[in-house]
Image 1 (tube, rainbow over the protein chains, first blue to last red):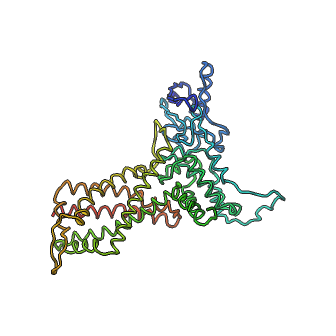
Image 2: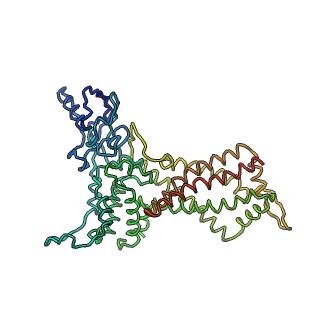
Image 3: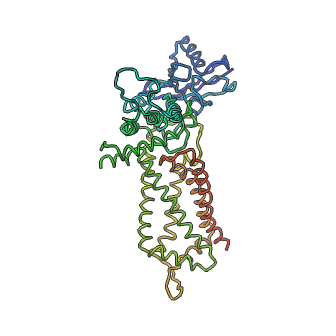
Length: 249
Length: 223
């Protein structure tokens, strides 16, 4: 395959970036999108040029590190992670434009790498359960309805890649935050900190500078893990309930 | 009160203001339409003029009217506030962007602005003249009434005036198409049993209500 790549190059957060075009003549359709970048970077290194910086880790679609905005869509044309996207999804001779996630809360660090530590800070604000150490509890000691467990698991499938933020016209993080709030709100272990969690995580989300949801549902359409916007409705309910009934004045 | 102001300035709290005021305005549309349909009665405007008189003189209606103006203002101010925040959340846009959402959901701000412009035109044309004139009077059964029907009838005898109303109702339809269902989602009312019902009523409302509103100027223009 022959591919023309238009890639966003930016030295660091303070520099002005620009697109740079690369011609690739020997791309296999079996390559993953990231392997295609590896090959290109090999060429660049041999030519003495700076390789393109991009985030990646497990390359199995579960870690949430890869983050490329490919041809106008987060993670490219398929509803999957960039690492699970293959060159067979593109046409021979196609021009592919690759950009970093664009959001004030995700500043570009270099080329296609953005700083997503805003997500970590939201999780640190309340996305956990406090557990005292002690003896190992018996499995299934606490009965949990199967339907609740399934919903919690579906929410917990979120890999925090940030595609929802990238896809949203408002750069809103509500799909991510709602998944994190939901996975704990649905389980008995999440109850003690339920109200405080909703209040703190939403407050941190706002403080990070993410936009507000306008229910366009673009996030759900682009999420590689199929996180549903029913979680956003649940987060709204959790937040209203918490704000009006918690004792945090 | 800190938590209270904090709530209404949070991202979700501001969305709630949009949803609640939006739903109130949706209810207002139904009442307004019911009153307006009297323009199509074949009685030379008698029913409509008596109705218009009641709407401007009844104290209860007056209070509801002020609530309504407040709701419109809140809806507009909170929308501007939210939109400004949302714009700053993405200072650098994408070079290539493919949309996976509906056109109306992405353009609520533009649609809303056009509706607001229409509202200014609409209030200036009918509401202002009904309250402060100049307006002729007509008498039914010995009582004097302001003849708003004649004002409306004269306005809709012009093609451009009728066209503005019909186009504005099409814009309203697109605004409602997203707004109706969106309000329920924001309220947290997302349930497998009721989602299809909300969706169906929302689409039907977005088509039927603006269509009936548009029908009035069209019929009066043709007559």
